[in-house]
Length: 94
Image (tube, rainbow, N blue to C red; front, side, top):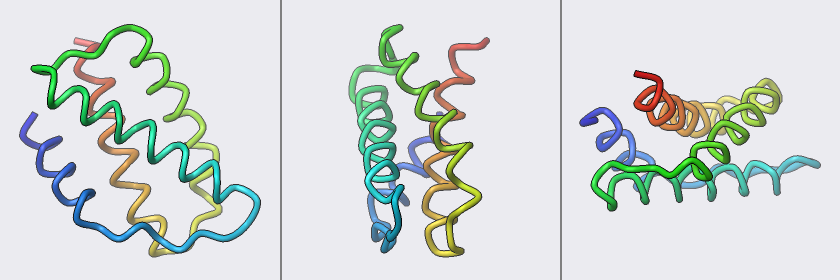
């Protein structure tokens, strides 16, 4: 999971993009929840309980639906968030 650790370090150092529009709050919530799952996974010895996995799947689905409306700067930020969520979900598919 070194890819996840690298992406997490980049994400923590990145500035949150300026968001406007009706879905700005939803993007912030998705960022908070996915980052919480990443933090828990990395701090807990690489374990996510079923409830967190379900939240992560729901967030990824919401992010997939909302990403087309993003500008370039926000798209880069949320693409990284999407990649981290996908990596975590893939861990439990194997």
